[in-house]
Amino acid sequence: MIKILIIVVLVAIVLSLGSGLFHLVKDDGQSKRMVNALTVRIALSVLLFVLLFVAWKSGLIVPHGISR
Image (cartoon, rainbow, N blue to C red):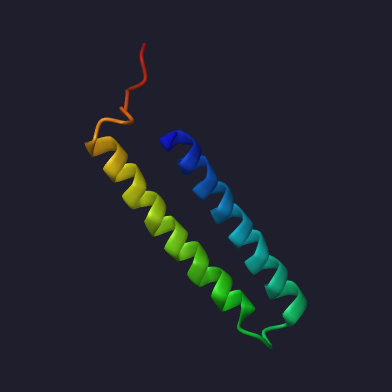
């Protein structure tokens, strides 16, 4: 369940990035929609970091090294 939530947040970050790019190209800097997309993307990135940290500390995800 936690992995699905992580993937959903990552997809939302990418969609926000695309939205910011679209508004950058189409609005020519005349509206605040690009700033809003950036704000949403930053909030989602912080949420993802906190989510990953909490999941790691609670043992829901386990980091592993590259095996040789």
